Every structure is written in structure tokens, then in C-alpha cells.
Image 1: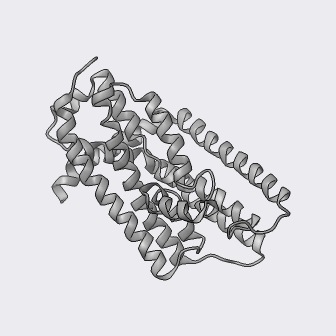
Image 2: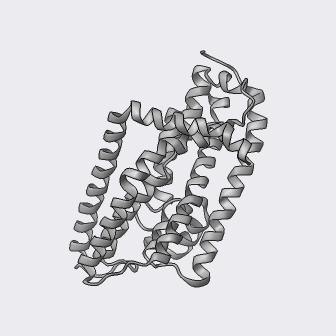
Image 3: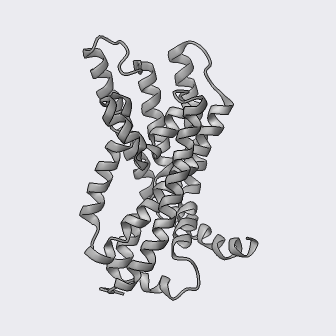
Amino acid sequence: MKRKLKIYLPFVNAGIQEVATYRINWIFFMLGNALACFVSYFIWSAVYESGGGGSMSGFTMPQMVVYIVLMFLTGTVIASDAAYVVGEEIRDGTIAMRLIKPVSYNATFLFQELGNKLPTEIAIAAPMIIAVEIIRTVLSGEVQFSALSLVLYLFSCVLAYLINFYFNICFGFIAFVIKYLWGANMMKNAVIGFLSGTVIPLSFLPGALEKVFLFLPFSSLNYTPVMIYMGKYSGARLWYYIGLQAFWALFFFVLSKLLWKASVKRLTVQGG
């Protein structure tokens, strides 16, 4: 294990240096996400006003505000660019340089992306959690913070990130066949935004459809961690959804290994 870490830790450092080099890009990325968060708030505020301001599908307006902020935080924490990066490396031929190295292709991506994410987690995670608790306290009139919910939320986010990373790796391997992923990646992001509860909470959907969406891996990305933090999941239901996250993380990990072995045989370098 120590030897493995010694091999892959330099990729973490490379990821950190990449963020430091392109810090203006990182700033604009965060501003874009924050703007989307504000837009979502104003839309839902108008929806609740037109509906009389009551509860909708188990969410009051104050709870929806917390939901929106937590979705912004969770989406940032578990974000993965693996599909885009894999697609670009296949398109321009730089993947050939990775293939000649005696290291795991997936692991190099994972550790480098962790390095990319580390500055983000340090910069926004703690302040955003504090902001969420201040918002909850102001809106409800009482302190609702739970250390256990926070720990379970963070654990759920780790599983959600692994699902997202390995799913995107699998999706990126499509570029071995279609060569260019930009359009497919845009469509994938739009579909996942809906299926993961980012656009609307999944509890707003009809009963049968909600059950199907909750079983799919995409609800495990954003919706499950947020519902855990808000205390919407508890007891056996809580452990069921955490177990479902673990299942999907393992599923996509194994699938990525199988797809890599099958896809690399189809490699055609177009650039490089």
C-alpha cells in the first residue's frame, strides 16, 4: 500500500499545481456555479409564491433554500471531469503517453483529479457548511446542526464522488469508438442534472417514477448526500441508500476495468 501511494502521490501534486496555474479558470468555474445556485433560488421562490407558500412534496420554502445550497456544495465536491479529459486524450493522441507508463490508467486520473479538488474542498467546503447551518438556524429559529448527519453526509459524498468518477471514466471510453465526446458529454450532463435531483427534488416526481430514479446510480450522486444531511433519510432507509451508493461505486469500478481492457484494443491515435 505504501509503495502504491508513493507511485501515485506525485499525480496529486500535479493536480494541485494545475489548479494553481489556471486559478482564474477555477474562479470563473466557482462563480458560474454560484450564479446557477442563485438562479435556482429565485425560480423556486417564484414557484412557492405562486403556490401559496406552503409545503410541496415534503419541502417547505426554507427547506428548499437549504436544499439548493447543499446541492451547490455537493455538486462542487463530487464533480468529475474524467469523461471530458479521457475523451480529449483519445482525440488528440496524448493517451499514448499514458499507455507506455507502468501505472494504472484509471488510478492516475483519480489521484490527479483528487489533487485538482483539494484546493476547492479547502476553500469552500467548511465555509459552505457553516453558511448552510447559519441559513437553517435563521430560517427555522433553532439550531439544527447534527455532527452525525455531517459525518454521514461526508461519507456519502466520498461514495458519490467514486460513482461519478468511475461512471465518467466509463463514459469517456466511448471516445474509443466515436472519437469526439463534446456533444455526447453535454447531453450526459443535462440528463444527469435531472436524474440526480439537481433540477428538482426527486420527491416531486410521481411515485413509480420516483422509485425508479432513486434506484438508478444518478440519485446517489447529489440527492442521497443532500437528503442525508437534511435528515430526510434515517434508520434502515438511511443505510439502504448508503449501501446502494456502495453497490454503484463498486459496479462502475469493475465496469471501468472491463471497458478499459475491451476499449484499448480499438485505440486509433488521431493526433500526438
